[in-house]
Amino acid sequence: MNVFREYLELLISSVPHALSACIMSADGIAVDIVNHEDSIAATLSNLRASSPAGGASQRVPPPRSRSIVERFGVEATQLFVEYGTLVEQFRSTAQMFAAGELEEIAARTELYTCLMRPINHEFFLALVLLPEGCLGRGRFLLRVLAPQIEPKLS
Image 1 (cartoon, rainbow, N blue to C red):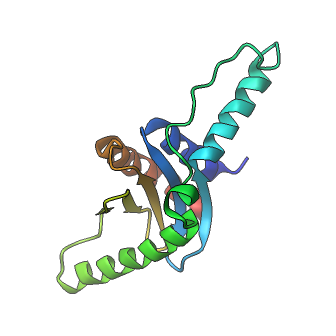
Image 2 (cartoon, one colour):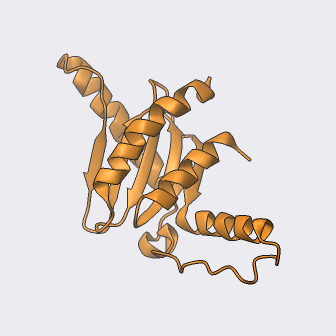
């Protein structure tokens, strides 16, 4: 299993109403991406594998939300690529005004919120969640996980 997938699945499973999580390079290439429906499939698979009865007696809760494609008509990767350009623009603006390093961006729309946190100068971590999602938990986990992911990117 991809080492980054574990972090992204943790984000999706720990933040209520999370739709998608991604590690993206500054040039728009996804290192890894996990959508809510992928995380549910992985959970089902793990439950079946760990159950002596093959998972027949395990009950898995229904999905918290529909897929990002069904909901917005766009692939999550496309969304992260477009928002990735904002990360670079905000970084250069912060440098221009000597405001220090960029720590976080939150883009909230009527339909979803996208949280982005730079991991280093080449990569960022992003999370998309529904408006009713827990922004505080998402921001906390991005802040905690980004430094853990950074050494694994080199």
